Length: 267
Image 1 (cartoon, helix red, strand yellow):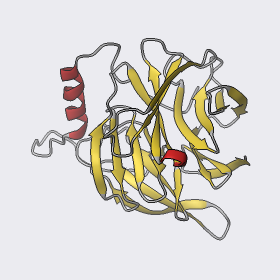
Image 2: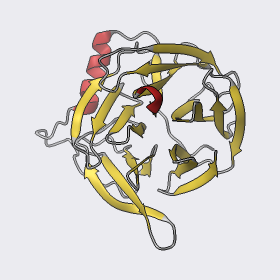
Image 3: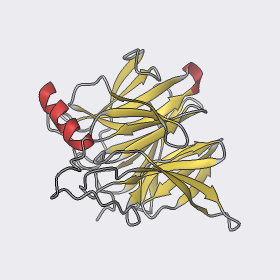
């Protein structure tokens, strides 16, 4: 059985009003109501995607509590004397119910993409929010990863088509979302799971796309595509608790549910 729990947000052609209502339910806390649980305990939460910035790895806890109030922290990892990465600090992001959060950085700030709410969040390395904005995408395209492309100082956003579950889309968008898309490409991954998992996160390095996903045999895989979105390599990952990836220079690191961060290989 797979270790990851990914909730498919919405189904097919939801109205704009329904999207707004769902996002409102995710974001708003109901702390005035005595029956609403606002307790926060992230100890048992998994982590999610990772990014490397200024000597630290960053991630978030994967909030499955269903509690109101603030439930999600930005986590900072550093290496100890045994060369093991551990949580060194955490910063409250004032959010809940976002599901899996993809994360990337531009060398200065962090960017997060919510799988559930279609939000893209820009924040500092200590969790100070610059903006929280909705992605400009129709609701049949489920967020599936976010990466930074240094060549044009832009974000790469990956999506999964909920109407055709082996179809994916990658868009080049400005970092402040003011330019909707300067490049927009759709491609197929016929060997990818079409139930709950699919491809769920993205990294970009040296003109190649690196994606984590689950195939039709329920194996976790790393898919590498060139800049034309042609597959160049597929690796099977034996540890099914893998949840995220990022580059530290030319070394690819993977994150795991139990808060481990380990080097995979160099490219």
